[in-house]
Image (tube, rainbow, N blue to C red; front, side, top):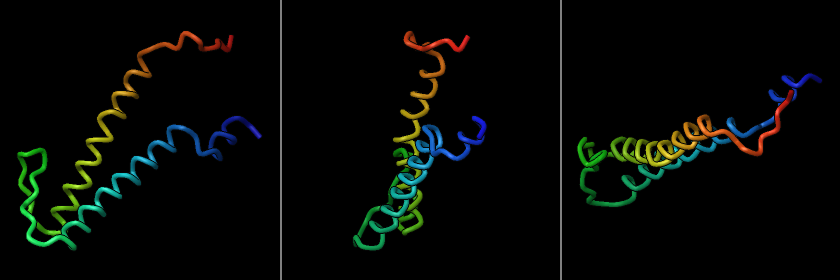
Length: 95
């Protein structure tokens, strides 16, 4: 088996993080729907305190999903940027 075949069969770091990110955004979306369905007399959510959304399950789904995507996505993007710019002093050269 070649190295590329081994990599395609493993569930490695980047793919795992992206799948977990997508699952958590989905959980936030479902949580928004459940809140709208089971809690009475909710006020309209405002996305980023600027964009008013309707007080419907769809509005709360958008609010939950987008909020979770931003709250998790910004630090994740920061980690990616920093990890690409900072060299590992303990890295081993393949030469």
